[in-house]
Structures are given as structure tokens and as C-alpha cells.
Image (cartoon, rainbow, N blue to C red; front, side, top):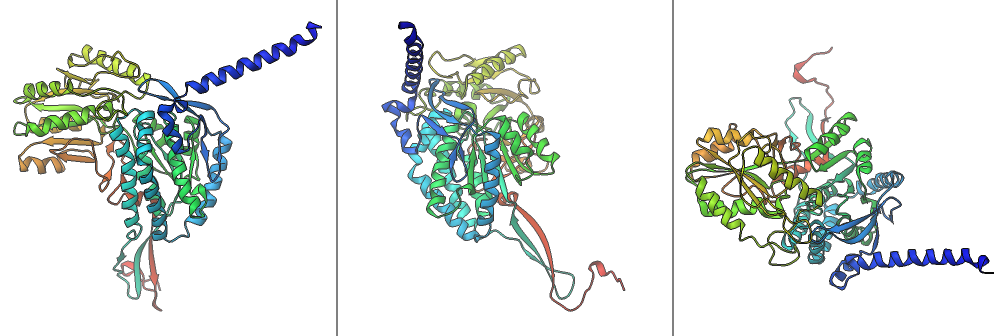
Length: 536
């Protein structure tokens, strides 16, 4: 009799074991702990759908998001399959037919509402950025504020975009420029700014008349989901198709599909130079339009007349902020020989006063690296720097605490063209170089492959304008007496050379999201040809 019931007993035990494991896994998620109950204010749960195109879905791989400060799991997200990506693109193209017919100032009104919706969630969304990415709380809130600011900027821009009416050489003719949306803008963002970079692209693309398809970083999927829920609620409130702002969480398969898809009229990619080069080639192969925001090996140059009371806090903020994980982080500090030792001593002292801790603690100035792999890259870079003649002035070690913490590090004694100095390592390592002449320093700034951000500290106005001129910095961001990081939204953000050449945010960056037509209108009864050509 027992033999008859044995299979049923075994099956019941297996089911019970699986249930217990699942319950245990759920209980270990941070989202289920009272301390992190605020995550549910963003509409997040233990398991979250990672696809949105008016409705939510996700049938792909289930990934777990981890907190870099303790490497504990936060919650899970179901990524997109390629078939779901295909469905999302189709729905996005259909949504564009509705969105493109709405006048630009009315589109600006929707963007204004998105900004207001973000304002209501700025604290809790900033906390999520801090928890999932690892940057300190004030930077997380600041990143959301940046999206809000770009929304405000875009609202005004929605009443200003347009082309000129030009003088025609032919009588009875008008010559003008017409700007139209490109259509579908694909946006692939990186882990280090999981809100702001999407915001730069999204707000401007929308007022220009485009729809957006977002693929955030695979390691910050909860932020992508939370932001999309906020935006989707605004669209729904205005009875607009949700696919105007769609999202597909995914890995390299989804990113590759976006790069190769001719229906993606513009692909904005933010990430490493290595991956960006591959993406750029795929887009170029189909003669698509691309906007690349890639790496930066940024330098601050300090001359003998510099105000060191500005130099020291600037260099510390730019090299230590976000634990060295900004594309605009200062990685090279080029010091005039007369101030070299003094500046190194003062910065090393300041480094030791940087408060390290949980990123969501309001007093913390420096948090963890984003992943364990980044910690390995940090250690490898320190060893290579030593092998190439560098001296570790401070830092150089992993911090003995939970999470991905490393010491902010200063290394001196390397040659300006040492291989490790010319390598962008996305960690808090500052290479200090010593120079004698202005021309030498400018040359060192420009000799790396990237060309994102740069800065000099000086009181010499002649030098300032040489720095800004054709023989000065070759970067997209050229500063004087301020750090390399912390760009304002009003200017165009981006860089040259291996940084990709793209421009986002302010100035005339909106033009990247539109196509230009030159239009000639004959309102006369004659047909004169340009350049005085006679064809009779």
C-alpha cells in the first residue's frame, strides 16, 4: 500500500522544497525588507516586467538586480525576447503616426507633465538610483533633477525649433529650411547615469516629434522600469499611445537588434568606446544615423599661476565623484613642476578625508564601484601602473567591507605616454604628471584617443584663449578654472575622436533628432534657373 503512495509523497516533498526555496529567495530580496519598502512607491515588486509598449510584458531571461553597496539582491526583472522587441518596434512605429501629428508646443506640454511627474518622485527615484547604481544619494537625486531640467528646457524649445528663410537669387522664389522628426529614436544607456542620459535624449526627441525605444543597462533594470512607469502614466493620462515611450530591458541581443534595425531612424548609444565602435559600425553598415557618447580620458592642467584653493577641491570632486565612474571623471592631473609637490600633498590629504560609506547615507561622499568586475579592473590597473614606473601615493587597495568598495587612488611618477595613462579605466585612479611648458601640457592633453572633457587652471588670459583656440584642447568640453565633470544642460554635451562625436542636451543638439530639408518654392509664373543658366 505504501508503494502506491510513495510517488505522490515524493512529488509533494519536491513541490514543498521548491516552494520553500522560492519563499526563502523572496525573503532575501531587499524589496521585501521594511527598510526598503519605499521601492514599492515606484510600482516595483519582487518580479517586474521588463517590456513596455503600451502594455507591460517580458518573456525573456529573468535577471536579478544587485545593490553594489552590499551585493545583496534587490528585485528581479523579466527581460525582452527578440519577438517582443519586434512587437515593440511595430507598436512604436504605429504610435509615431499619432505623435507626429501633434503640434510641437502641444508635445512640449506632455514633456512638461513628465517633468512634473518626476518632481513628485524625485526623492524616491533618487534613492533607487543610489541603491541600484551605487552613486551617493545626492548624486542620485541630482541625476533625476537633470532629467527634470531637460524637460523644462525642452518645453521652451518646443516653441523655438525651426529653420531659417534664406534669400533666393531667383526672383519670385522663396528658399527655406524645413525640419522634421526622424521617426523612431533608439536609446541605449549605460549604468553610470541610468536616468539622466535617457532624459537628455527622451525630452528632446519627444518635442521634435519622435517616439523613443529605450534599452537601459542590464545591471540597472529597476531604474529603467521605474522611470518608464512614471512616463507611461503621463501618456495614459493624456490618452496617448504608451508606445510613444517604449522600453525593452535586455542584453547584447536586443542592443544588436536595435543597431541593425533600419526602422530605428536614430540610435543614441552611451557606453564604452569598444562597444560603441561595434555599434557604430553596425549602424553605419545600414547607412543609419547614430549619436555616440563614449569614453573620456580627461585631464586637468594646473599652471604655476593657478589658484590652488580652486584646484584642490575641483580635482578631488572630479576624480573621486561617483567613485570615478563618470565619463567626465578626471583621470589625468597634469601639474606644472613648480606646484607639483604642493598639489599632490594637498590632494592626498583631501583624499584621506573623503567620507566612505553607504551611498544612501546623507553624509557619504564616496560609494562603491558598480560591479565586482570593476573591482578586478581597479586592481589590475594599479598593478600595471606600478609595473610601468608609477608610485602609489595613497589608496591602491580594496576596502574590507561588504560591497564593491576600493580606495580612491593617486599615482605619480608615470610617463605622460605610459600605456596605462592612455587607458581609460572606469575606476577612481588619478594619474599625476609633471610638465614644464604650456605647449607640452596642451600636447599631453590631446595625445589620448578620447576627446571628451578637459580643463586648465590659470589666471593668464592669453593662455585661456590659446586653450580655447585651434591649437588648444581638442575636446568637446573645454573648461577654465572648473573641473572636467559637472556639465550644465544648457550646453551641448559630447566629445571628439574616440568619444564618438555625438552631442546631447543643450545648444543645437535638437538637430540630431531631426532631418533637414532645403525647400525652394516658386510663387511666380517664370522658371529662372540658378547660377544664371539658360536652357532654352
